[in-house]
Image (cartoon, rainbow, N blue to C red):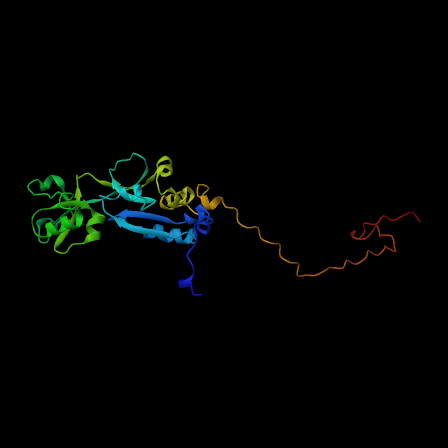
Length: 262
């Protein structure tokens, strides 16, 4: 019988699979501008037996992916509603002002927000998000303020971005459901285990593989079997009884022996 023709598992057979083994995978979401490649590589090095799945979410769904069980963790852009969540701020983002190509800001490396009082700024959220807002900027309808990483991610043609000073910064954080919320979730059996989540958090925070706070570091390595003795059986030679008394003068320098009276 081929693999495709194998009979499906019965409910009893499915129940025999341990819940912790079924949950030995990790899923995380991230908003535009976050580059999770380095964390994915470290995970694959340390946890090769635990599959890691990632996908991009927009700012409007960055928390809903946690609550509906689509992701175990989410890289979010603050501020967010923190009820029922654990949230760890990670880093601040550099703001930029994006203008249509040929705008006068093009001749500067950075621009102060106070110098743009006469400009029209677009509401990114009202326009449906960064990508749609950048298309409007390219048409010449106004300027937009975005995190630099987001502007680079979408890289819309016919726009130019410059560093912006004097503007509020945004922050990227890592969020996941707290223990009480996780236990109350309907799909709790499908969620990653707490140790798997803690392992990923440690990687994101820069902990080394040997850190005592990493769950994987607490697993005792298998003991190595002793190497066989390649010398074989060594037959010790029997001690031979000394036939002569030791010479008391042996090892002394010349003239060290006392001359007796004749």
